[in-house]
Length: 272
Length: 242
Image (cartoon, rainbow over all chains, first blue to last red; front, side, top):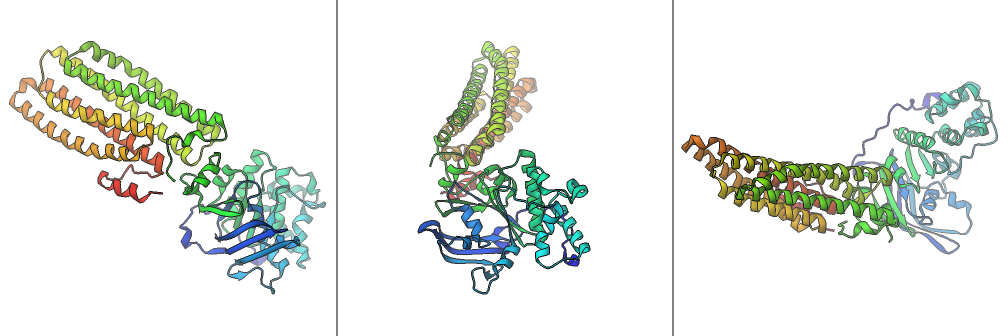
């Protein structure tokens, strides 16, 4: 196991290359989704490039979190959902009958708004998913825990109290612990739903720095209400409104010269 | 997306609308003062009015003060509002524009100082015909650039940028004929040099007006045309129609 661990994160490859030349992680085609007969996503078609940060922005209820949840099939947990269209991850339809949903969720990890560490030690939190995969040897676990905490930029702060309760950590540390727990099972994608909205500005910057450093080996998809955050960390930004994809562009362009008035109105705080 | 002159007054935050409006209003006030400075400097020169020339020289401080004040306001908007899209472009265009306006002000006071020197020398120098001619062009450029800024008028901005080429070629011709005058009459060298400095100042004012016009295109279209040849401007701007 340890031999397959990627090398420690060194620096982020910040440059945004041409969208067309970037390989796809997710390809979404004609995606429609309705809860209880209420349309939440309307015919979305977009691709999410690999090893980039893509942000979804839009007003409350625009469908951005719903779209994020479709990407690791969390919407399956809701019974009254009807879905049309195709979502593929690295070319494979994630809704195909042979897909193992647990394995999909390992590959596509998710971090929520409120940090949710388990009521156990820091070490056990990070080792939790790895143990579920059947890895029990202490030496291997130790190595993975250190690697994951280091990748989540938390190792130096917790290395002397690995067996202390995770709940004793600050909110920002808890959120980084949750990210470490997700990284420990070596996902390909990290979905982040408002990961910093419950955190203070310094903790927020640490999370943003972490997002930036992780994209050298992961694809990250971020939902945020904070437009400055999307502007700071993402390479591409998709603006959704009423379940529709309004505009999707390189973040540099979207925040300086959006193509459409609806986008302009939203990002500049105008009435639309 | 193209924007119009009332785009910046539609924010949910009325205070933000107000701040951006103030920024534009103050820039226009600075533009008005600078335009007057250029006009007075030329009048002082052509009429040999040394009192007017002194006033232009002394007013330069007011132009500088306005630049500092507007830049400070713009910095405050950046820090407090983190503007995006057309709001960001407006703030950047204003910051850039104050710097060009301030330099136009400097050139106007240079013209005034040379006008004073010419009045003191007490001789009617050669080259006033050229100065009159070029100054009409340049004054129109400044006025049109400011109007284009106030109205977010792309067509007018493109016209200003293209007019700069005419001014540049008239400047070259005028300089050449002044050289000939100097060779013909070495006693006139010092006064002709003053006229040359004045022409040079006018030519620079034309360049700054051209810059102002380019900021209007950036502001409205999000298109940076600072290093685009003026004969390609129409094409570039047309391509970005939305």
